[in-house]
Image (cartoon, rainbow over all chains, first blue to last red):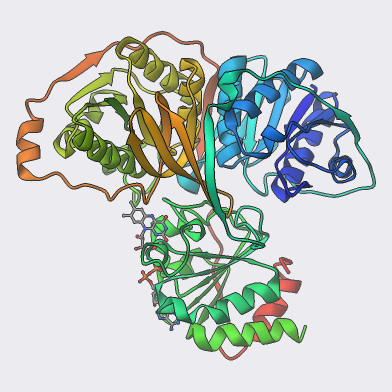
Length: 320
Length: 245
Ligand SMILES: Cc1cc2nc3c(=O)[nH]c(=O)nc-3n(C[C@H](O)[C@H](O)[C@H](O)COP(=O)(O)OP(=O)(O)OC[C@H]3O[C@@H](n4cnc5c(N)ncnc54)[C@H](O)[C@@H]3O)c2cc1C
């Protein structure tokens, strides 16, 4: 099966989540006999995009129309549908994200495709096409058969192991045709947390709860995150109280993350918080209460005061 | 202004999930149901906008009769009337086709729903409906104002937010802090009993995905406790045992 992978880029560089999407697509293509084409939209440097080859893409279609520099699910879906046609792809892979889901949905409706969002494993293609996905906010899984000729899958982080190899994809100019309908909204402004590592892309997350006691106490947590090259997250009350920005809120009603390592500092481990982190490979909990429910979901635990433990961990990492 | 708010009827966030019928059905025994938390935000903002503009707000659910307590709750919170499409929702595409069908018949200026349901978490119904109706969809929306047929709203993007402007009609997937959840008052509960709730038959759709089975995650191993004064040990274990550093 020929596979098309929708790329998300950040300042022209392929996001980690999209590197996984390419690797996932490459695994599907090699199991079913086919090649992988990646689709890049908006600004992008050809030498950066060629790196898609390291994860298994043979070719990158690059549509550099400057209007595509703004995230736009309508125009992106139009471009994706045209790229499916141009490449004869029957499988489309995207990383699960706000824009990924939106593009997947709109393209699926146009192509009458079978769509699964939240895949956690590679599909089973022996005698059919079924894929396992996360449901009930990580409390369970469902295996779903995808019946339509075109299949669109949005994958969760860590759905596949990424091994970068030598390789370079051929980057081709792609000129999809857009209609007026594709540019219906005007962006009037944006706020972005500068150079901060994004939560969904991060391999390590250090996250703080109400146990951090106030926004003025965040420095030890930020220091640890910096020492680890980690992103910072928080519990819902922390963002509700404006101690931390809303885009750091993790859980049932916030961002769902699945990093390799999640370090929870002064978070009790309410079921709604756990729902957002239970895809993590390894969970470390630091809490002064030995009865905190989070320990039941943890791999490693330290019973102690965050303000004592965090600097020790930072020091231990720096000393190597 | 005519507003449609689509709600899901889902297990409470604290519900224990298990399955029956050879792992093909959710075990509903002892499970409390709620309006999806994100849908609840959409409903709250919808009611505020309706009150400001003096329009009409219809609440829609695709689901069997079990959903009616949640639909009544939405009426008690401030919806004017309700439509229930009488069907077990089989997948996102099925639900989207039902919503699009209702919307085509009635013509709404604004369709709001949660960014995702908390049972299947797909986050794709607003996009599907948008495409089926040929109108723009945006998600996750965290701020929304309507003025003279134009929506001004903020959408969460990776690591921040973006402010947008677009003409109605629109479909938006909502999340906090678009509004505060509303709790029905006594008067709301009383009037909700007599507000119209129309039950309609589903339109047929193509079956694009089929559920094969559900499963629970493997049980978590015991947590390894490390004394607070041995932080170095934790770092070493993360490197050598867990291999995540
Ligand atoms: C519908 C619904 C959706 C929700 N969605 C979310 C969600 O998406 N995300 C989310 O996080 N919550 C969510 N919640 C809220 C959730 O139920 C909890 O209230 C919340 O997660 C608690 O946050 P917390 O752990 O930071 O605070 P608390 O529960 O107050 O816990 C603070 C913890 O810090 C520890 N502590 C205190 N001081 C120290 C110290 N000096 N050193 C070490 N430890 C210390 C305490 O022992 C305690 O365990 C939701 C709730 C509902 C009803």
